[in-house]
Amino acid sequence: MSERELREQISEYGKSLFNRGYGVGTSGNISVRLPDGMLITPTNCSLGKIDPERISKVSLNGSLLEGDKPSKEAFLHLAMYGARERDDAVVHLHSTYSVALSCLQDVDPENVIPPLTAYFVMKVGRVFRAPYYPPGDAQLGNAVGKIASQYRAVLLANHGPLFSGSTLDSAVAGIEEMEETAKLVLLLKNEKASSLTPEQCQDLLERSSS
Ligand SMILES: O=C(O)[C@@H](O)C(=O)COP(=O)(O)O
Ligand SMILES: [Zn+2]
Figure 1 (cartoon, protein in one colour):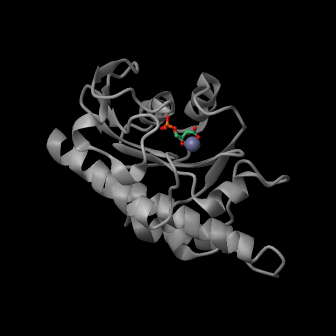
Figure 2 (tube, rainbow, N blue to C red):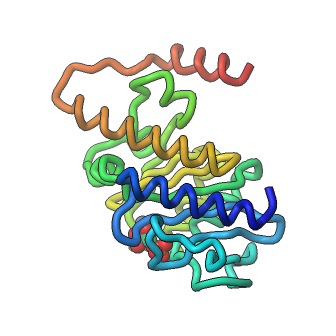
């Protein structure tokens, strides 16, 4: 895809996510990798109103090359790209159920969302809960950078989901599935639900990679 098409795609997905309630106010940010850096939504910009021409273009070290001032989470997106060579898009949202889950105590940080459904296992996989740091704090980038090679899905504590995909289509699909499963986790909180077993999860991964 050309840079112009990627800019249009970011704007279209931002609008779609915002209109379907995955974002409110100016929360969330979207990026795509470029050969020499990335395109990322500007800071304080509603995902529902992204002007393709004003999207920020930053270098691999985070310096602004073109466009408006970038999202304060640019370093977080770069941390994902640095560790995940095959991924070219990252999405961060404040979608309600994932944020609610990110505030819960006593969760397993290495597997914060249980494998309730096959689709979740295939599209999301294990989710890491990163410790709390204020938005825009470089320590969050370090914490995520350390585990990003093993996790495409991260839940930032007391904040929200972050998801990396090979394309923007797959990053958006993944973060939507993460939100849907966070909703199921909360719906089933007081029920006797069963998760898929490790063997069932492994079987699904083998089927989807063949
Ligand atoms: O929670 C925050 O402040 C950021 O993570 C966020 O979602 C929006 O920040 P900008 O992308 O800088 O607008
Ligand atoms: Zn945020």
